Length: 224
Image (cartoon, rainbow, N blue to C red; front, side, top):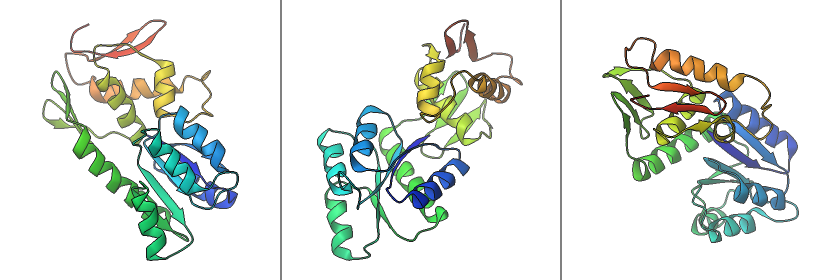
């Protein structure tokens, strides 16, 4: 999963970035509103963490621009003002949640999980390919009725493959959806993670579902 953190206080931005990365998020950071808005509109994110008080363009204007563009990405506002009026205002403007500073990583992650459960339960049906099933609402993955434990990165990778079942998924697509913008595309990390995922999904089953397409990437398909 990918997150965008827009926060001008660098120590807070680093704190949030570190906490998200510990939960296997790919994280991009912007330190002003204009840069944050540019990233939000040009990249795909699963959640945006947006401070209200930002240089160049404040968080409320960034939020308004995001929603005016039709972007439905969940947005959690960071605010130092613990007032009902401030919270109601940002929620009415289109924010999905807010966190009052100071806050803990565990609180932020709990709010992200809650938003993700609500959005996936509402928007995303269960994915199935052959006897492999992925439930976005619970993040549960099973094959042949057997539960398969995946890391967050492996889950994100499998979701991308299943969402594009039967169609090639390039390494570039994987990098853009699973890792952040600073990822070194010249490493073999993508291949290593696909290999680990393949070990969990295919190793104990006769029918293999994850296939390599030489020079292109990978495809998840019941028949190859």
